[in-house]
Length: 207
Ligand SMILES: C[S@@+](CC[C@H](N)C(=O)[O-])C[C@H]1O[C@@H](n2cnc3c(N)ncnc32)[C@H](O)[C@@H]1O
Image (cartoon, rainbow, N blue to C red):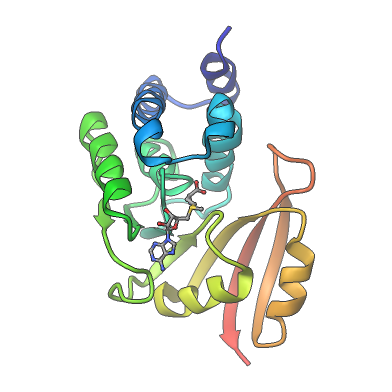
C-alpha cells in the first residue's frame, strides 16, 4: 500500500478530495526539483509531514467559516490543502493564499486550475497586501509567534481565529508573545509529530 492510500484511508474524505490531493502531490513532486516547494529531505514523507499535517488544521476551524486566509503559503501547506477540501462538510466559503514568491504562486495556481478549485492567490508581501478580514488565518513555518501576531493584526477579523502549527519551542514563543499581546490560546496536540502542536488563537489584542 502506498503512503497516499494509507493516509487517504485514515482521512474520511470524498473520492473527489482524494483525487485533488493526489493531483497536488503529483504536481509538487514534478516541480520540486526546480523551485524547492518543500525541502528535498521531506519529499518522501509528503503525505505524512505535509498533507496530513495540513488536513489536521482544517479539522480545527469552525464550520463553514466565511474567509480562510493562509499566509506564506509556499508549496501550499496548509492553505492549498484547505482549498482542495472545498467539498468537505464544514469547508470555508472562500480561501485566499498570500505568497510573495512568483514561482510558488505559479505552482499554487497550476494545482488550482488542474483540480478545478476556486481560490485566490495573491502574489504579494503579507505586510503590504490589502487587509483580508480573515475569519480563520493560518500559517505554517513562516515566522515566530510575535511576528505572526503582527501579520494577524493586519489580516484577521476582530472575532477571527488564528491556527498556527508550531514545533517543540511553542511554549517559549507563547511566553515571549505575552509581553506585547493579550490572547486566548489552546494548544492542540499534533497528529503528525509528538512535540508539535497547533496553536488556536483567539481574542488577539496588542497590550
Ligand atoms: C518556509 S516557507 C513555508 C511554506 C509553507 N507554509 C509550508 O509550511 O510548507 C515560508 C514561505 O513564506 C513566504 N514568505 C516569507 N515571508 C513572506 C512575506 N513577508 N510575504 C509573503 N510571503 C512570505 C516564502 O516565500 C515561503 O514560500
